[in-house]
Image (cartoon, rainbow, N blue to C red; front, side, top):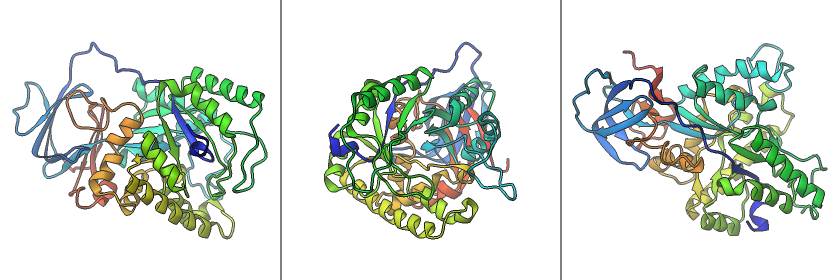
Amino acid sequence: MDAPYCSAFAALLLCAASAAPAAGAPKLVKLIKAARLIDSSGRVVTNAVLVIEDDRIVSVGGATPPPAGAQVIDLGRLTVVPGMIDVHTHMTYFWDGASGTRPRGNTRPAAVSMVLAQANLKKTLDAGVTTVRDLNASEYTDVAMRDLIRMGAWVGPRMFVAGYGLSITRQPFRPGAIPGPATADGVSEVIQRVRQQIAAGVDWVKVFGSTGSFEDVSQSQTFTYEEMKAAVDTAHALGADSIEHATDIDDATIAEMARKGTWYVPTIDHNRYYAEHAGEYGFATGSVQRLNEFVARNLETARKAVKAGVKIAMGSDAVYSMFGENTRELGWLVKAGMTPAQALGAATANGAALLGMETSLGALAPGFFADIVAVDGDPLSDVNVLIDRVRFVMKGGQVVVDRTGH
């Protein structure tokens, strides 16, 4: 990784693979019928039939008689697509909207917030998102949440988690300033912290490579290049990197990202959310203007990345009252130059590839997890169908949302 390539951005590093589902119980067979199937590649199958055994798809095609004993789910005129993947969330960030309170600053123990955040899990599933990558949580509550879902104790999207994001206490740099050389102690500390994260059971390691959060759009670099490289080198052998939120990336860096195959997660929509909810958060005067200006710059950066062929995955950066709006990012990806089919790919196959799960997630094909979303309309002609018209969600062979009226 070249020095300009990672400066001032948050690098995220894959550290472990998810556990495989348990086997041994009698197979539960389901057959889903729908007017159309659209895969992450844009392939269309009319009068589609999917056969599912337990948590996996075993066949996809046209008219097929149901296997003996199969549960038949007839979705009628609806269109099925792969379960969507949100690669940037904060599932444990809970706020109940109580009068006189704000999303930030609650004094509940982290474990209590995690339990209450089951509401976030439900809203995320309601949006058609069946897998998330969660990127910062207090006291490893995201690890606990992930494991409770895997055990079947809770219902929620499949989670890949980062535990604590790594940050630094050094005085923030001026915008545009370059940090001085890292000390040996600084590099050693980074290596130690990355190893601690992996030992704690996280799937990813997150590094806050620049300032910025909520209404703060300052983007000043924090970690030095040497420190960020130490984090990358410690975890890099086990996975791939992505860059989140990055705005104002120069053309040379965008070209380098395309050449190296680095994933870009623009998270454009979350600043739209902050601007619309500024009163809820108690943001200072002028914050809305700065947030809207940042959205415009973020969108322009995404346009350049799309044009250059940078690999892009959908991430919402959902927090607090934003859950359920996870897929609004797709509208911005289309504004950035993607077709609706490409935006669907960003939320399915691309998210799976970023997670290193491209042979199990992100497609409707034999051997893949039975993560299936049914929408009312044609998502290839109108991306808003994916955002506003989800009617049915299956995750791992289990129906978790059914608004079909059956």
